[in-house]
Image 1 (tube, rainbow, N blue to C red):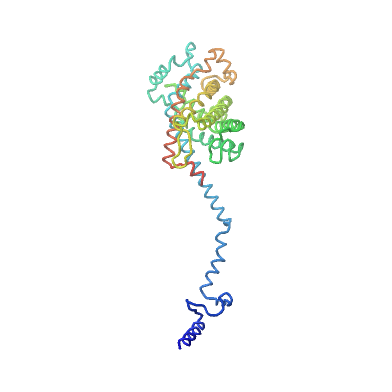
Image 2: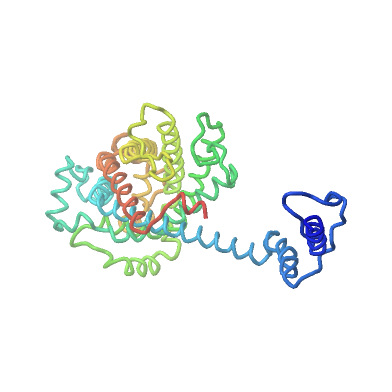
Length: 402
């Protein structure tokens, strides 16, 4: 009975597709054909999921790519606008702080043309005497005379100069500039063409910005050189109207030739020297402790003292080279007010007459206050620019990534 009961159990298990765990009866499982599974409703979603999956992992649509590109372009445009605004505010603050030095420089440059005392070609014998002379005649506020036009001139001038310089440099060296690696760091040995490209870009930017903003520069010079009690204009708008009526549209570009002779080499020399010094101090370990390291990206940039040093050296060098032409352009900008038409001179005649009457020192008159304003101007621009960047949350690295 035990054998029969055991056989019955085996037959029962075989009928239901089960086998005893302790022993195997019959052929091995590999020889038994596997039953064909019957499709069930649950298998349909899995097949659908397999069919849909490739669509989600495929290339993005044209519309998606266009939207992403438009977003990136918008981000770059906003970042560029923020940078230009920060630069404009920084330039305006620096101009306002150093306005007394600027006015002294211009008064020294043109005094021999406007004075009625031919024996006294210098505006003042000392810098302190010049400041006292201005304050005595017009009060403390007179030190900032013409500064409103200078500030108004700064925004479009900075925007045009920055935009043209960056685009010309990109056109000459390509979007990935040859003197920088893929992370934006300067190469240890930049090619010789990098400095030439920077020089050309700076000259082009200076030319375009000067021509576009020259009317404001001319009005600023005329307002700055007005003597108290003998004013010709009541402000910027009045100066525009009177110059247009008396001299025509050409009057706004009086002295443009000497101005370009100043601006083109000035910006070319300044930007070339600054860029070269920047590459040097970022590469030389001597200046390691003076560099500024970004906490997030680890990128090394110029700190306050290195920026001050590079800016002061580039500004001083460009000023020493171009100052004689700056003296000539200032005199030409105001000669329509003080000189009869038949006695007006060209730029070449101006510089020849100055050297003949006053010697070489005549073309460098006013150089001292011009050099004294370089360091405070660069320092103010740097501090204001960094403050505005923090205020507007301008992050160069993030913007570039977008």
